[in-house]
Length: 256
Image: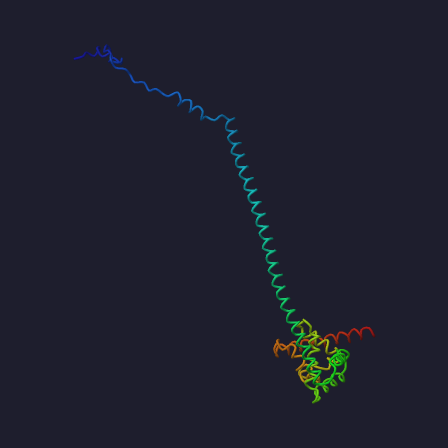
């Protein structure tokens, strides 16, 4: 048994390495330190890295702007091309319509001329003389002129001939226009038309009872149909009445 005083005399166990055994040393690669040290960024290298990133981003934005500008230019040219194509198609359609319209006009003129010749042979009256008479008479300015023409139409021996001649003459007034009102203005003056309305109401005389309106004028506009024809004639009469009122107003104002 160890005495208490011997405690302080105990020799500690040897910490030396036993013979024949060597301590293993951990060898660190020199490259590890080198690579680790290279990854440490100095303030200068950090600035360079940020500058490179900024330059790259700026180049990307510039490239995007160039692409967008080119796309806008392509879109603009495409729209211009579409517009030109639309105009070309429209011109082609219009040209086709015009050519067809001219063909119809030529055929109508030939037909009218044949009708004139046939009518003149039947009636024994010169077509040119009758057309000259109508040209001098129209637009009719008095009731006497209107009723004289109606009486000539109603003459038994000349009814069909005169009506046909009137129709051919109204065709020349119509021309290529589809406006009923324009032809009505060339047939009736505002002064005499102020005495008429379509159905003869309110003390007016009836246009619908005149052969030159209900037969001759309708014949050249029959494609409009009877209802639309009546509406257009009513509209033309109303416009004529307004023009006449305006003339009277200006005349009265001038005389004051």
